[in-house]
Length: 258
Image (cartoon, one colour):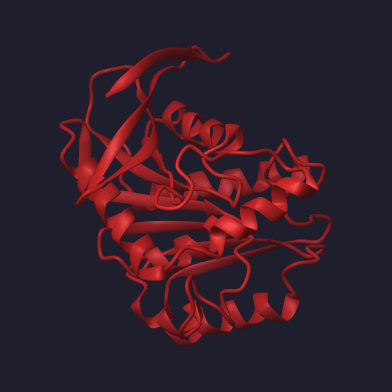
């Protein structure tokens, strides 16, 4: 673990943050790591990036979870093709990010998340049977996919596009794996999201219902794509605040927080 810093918010909740390396065979995955700066055994959450890499928004979500009492880690899923990549949200950034996203493959993503799980389970302050995930945009799709891993005990998926009709790298759509999801999943969508048709949201909800997966699907009438991110023009504070309340509810109920 390197570059350890201390951070303190207005509620006097101090955390430790670092960039770490997660080994996956010959691949060393860069990951942003945050943990409570106190003694304890904590549940853990894997934070999955948008197409913009492990950027400031993803790092802030990771830190936010640590302040809530979780060990949190955000692995760089573009490590193979674009190490050290991160960007903001300009139109040109979107085009570059989509290019990197299109080079990902479902089996490699599952392998990288499995390696991240192994990294967490090796830490002395992590409950190995209490690991969840949260993802946004591209990451919202990814966490629906990685919810099929048996170690993932709760999943929060934000505006994951393409779940009913695609999967990273091609092949059967991710929705066809719904029956393999192992634990509760909450999915969050904005009804004004131009990139995710409401019919896709309905398909996701129907698949979860048919497979008897514990779930909740939240639709926010005034929110568009990226509504949770305060770095984007589409940020919708009321919807973001409500969604965060439900995320904490999900993890509190299923990760057995200290």
